[in-house]
Length: 280
Image 1: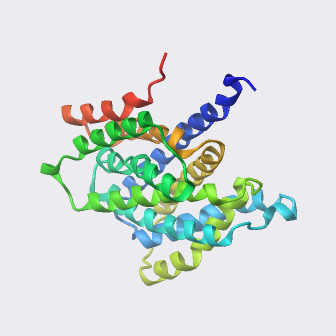
Image 2: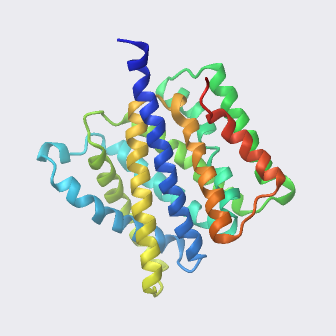
């Protein structure tokens, strides 16, 4: 097998992650538009319910043997990790700018390095460790301790759960389809999210439901693409591609919310983006 053919899965995984992060960024825009008008618990439950409805036809049209859940324990853990991360995400995006919140979100690849060593016995190269540290420093510059906001703690919670969610997918057998993985992960999240939503339920306007539906569509697409990507290549080789979403949220923040980055934010973004640049 040639070196070029060996590298192909990694390149494809990176492309899938970049596309997924574009869609995840659009989901963040939908949450920002809601502006705290919907409680996090209510948002999470409705998003998961809509996601399940979107996934069901694809899951049902598979062969019966492909619908079965291969690793219920790991899937159950991933379902509730996703709930925690989603709740933290709603709070952080509501109170922080898109760029600031996502700068903290994108410390997830750094967190994936020790997690991949601990859970998957992967051995990242010194170069990969250095690149992720550079990206993390860029995120710190964007956040800036002098402007620290309590919501940044929730953003860090999102980053931690995202890293764990993506790492744990490697514990799921490769013969389980992406649709089945997403379907069961979403379904298993409904009891807890539904119970919390019931406690904090409030009337909704149709436009709020529309934004939640859009967010669900975008984020389930991201989850699917990320699931495929992390099955195709080791996390330590592709996790830097997660940083691409920061570029998208900065652009969307400028266009839709007048969130103009200052010079330090630009420097931080540069430190995050530079390691992603292809080497000639």
